[in-house]
Length: 65
Image (cartoon, rainbow, N blue to C red; front, side, top):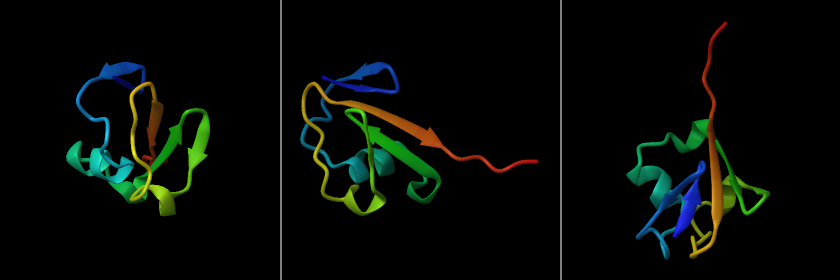
């Protein structure tokens, strides 16, 4: 199980961060990802594999004024 934004998610172990984001309709250009307490550079989204016990926080940027 992997914790994503405080919610436990099953069956995503082995996917990359990019796969998870795309599958869940996140705009990769408009998010920041923290994986296990560290900010993950966008260049690593394609190679960073999610593993059981990981904790991922996803923050979406929204424009406004």
